[in-house]
Every structure is written in C-alpha cells, then in structure tokens.
Length: 118
Image: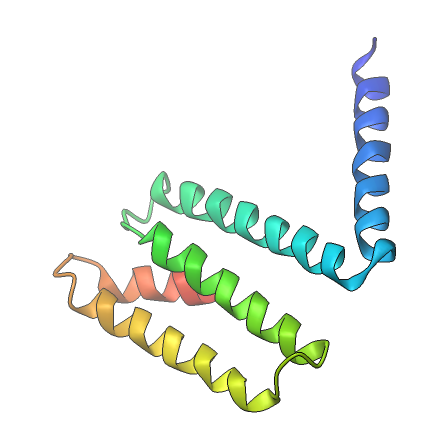
C-alpha cells in the first residue's frame, strides 16, 4: 500500500471519529476533546523538554491544569455549573505560577511563560 493511500485511510478514519464524537451526544464530544487536549498537552511538554530553551516543565501540573480548564469551561458551556465556577481556573493558574517560582530552578519565568502560552 502506498504512503498516500495509507494516510488517506488514516485521515478518513480520524475524521469519522471526530464527527461521530461531535454528533453522537455532548458527553462523547466532551470526552473526545478532553482526550485530544490531554494528548496534545503531553506532546507539547515532551517537545518543550527536548527543546533548546533548556526548561524543565512540570508536565503533570500542566496537563492537570489544561484538563481542569477544559472541564470547567465545558461544564459552563453546557449549563452543568454556573459561570461563577470559572474562578477555579484563575486560582489553579495562580497556584501553578507560584509553585513554579518556588521550585528553585534556573528558569522559572521562561518555564511559566511556556506553560501559559498553551
């Protein structure tokens, strides 16, 4: 099988999964995009760790914060919770920033900047 044909079949498969997850119901939509968010953040932190910036990102905290941001925004968007709960996102981001400052590493500000860039 040629490379183009294999990529075409894989692309069609993933498009069907995306469309199916969005159309089926709102829970499958949330689960699918939460999975995409978490996997994307893991990939991002892996790329940062091996980059030229010489930073040491906290992957667990970053992925957890990204998942928390997605979940709270998802719950507000679909009316499960009130928008007052979005203040949890602010507290989570502030706590991550403060914990980065107290890690006693050489590059706390670039690492925090890269984390908030996501």
